[in-house]
Amino acid sequence: MLTFSWKMDILTPLIDQTAPAPWNEYAFEIVTIRNQRGQIINYVLVGMHSDISNQLQHLLNILLLITPLILLVSSIGGYWLASRVIRPVQTITRTAREMSETDLHRRLNLHRRDELGELAATFDRMLDRLERAFARQRQFTADASHELRTPLSIINTEVEHMLQRPHTAEEYIQTLEVVQQENQRMTRLVNNLLTLARTDKELVMLKRDQVDLSEIIVDGAERLAALAQQNGIEIFLSGLDEILVRGDQLYLTQLYTNLLENAIKYSAGIGKRVDVRLERQEKQARIQISDEGPGIAAEHLPFIFERFYRADQARTHQQPINGVNDSMGSGLGLSIARWIAQEHGGSIQVQSSPGQGASFEISLPLSSPPKMHEMR
Image (cartoon, rainbow, N blue to C red; front, side, top):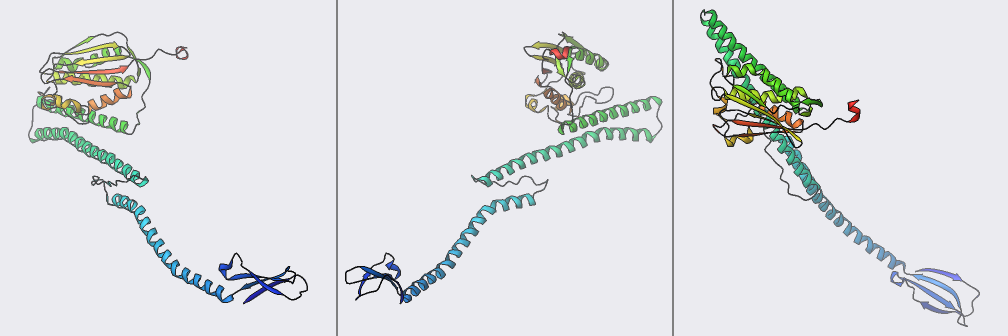
């Protein structure tokens, strides 16, 4: 037993009284000592040492029993929770590691509504874009290789034929003309490929000058007059009022002459005229180029502006011109034309049906009036 006392004064006969302590549940009691007059003269704090030891030992035993169990449950729960959180990350890592440029069809498809689910969905959308980009690149490479192989094969065939035996001067001249035309064809193809490569990388910086479309139309028709005459085509121009747009004159000229040259080539041997009309409609300048060629089937119209796409056999395989099928284009001109129109804030529309020719319409925003500081 432990006893603590506080003496107040000299005692006469003592009377022991016990007052229950509020912490009696911990085996402690306060014993009051009173004198004969009933006055409290001392307090004694009494506690059982053995009870305290027993309770402490009991508490220690409980802690020793519960603590490992708590640690085990916490470890299992933490491992399960960590695995649940890390599993999607491991899936993304494994998928990315196993993927290559020839195997881009795999997707994560993690249907979760948390941040990891959003990350997986973003990763899948990125794979969609990459798959389409690689598919376009492979198709582009294959088509470009095919387009370059064709003129090279023609040149090689003509040269081999001329080397087999002596020929007349006229035959040599005809062969050289074929070689020259195929060389020009390859040159146009390479230039178009370079243009498209520059547009893909956004390396083309267009000027924003005041350009008169009527001048572009007249100059382009004069430049292609010889080609039209060779193919028995007459170019008719109408609506040549001054119409100003803001843009790059070089690229706008390329846009117009590309469409006009196609109209002449595809009309060769079929039609007799190509009509070009310039007009102003509200806030738009419109150039309409119509031919009398074989036309384009409706199912091909949505795709004719794609790279290397050819509308159909009727439009791409005409009768040879001067011994060479020069009307067979590379399928890049319309793609470049659409890019030029879009970069100038405009568009290209086409209307056609088989046997009825084709009509291409270029729409460009009119140039706004010059500001005062630009006029000075």
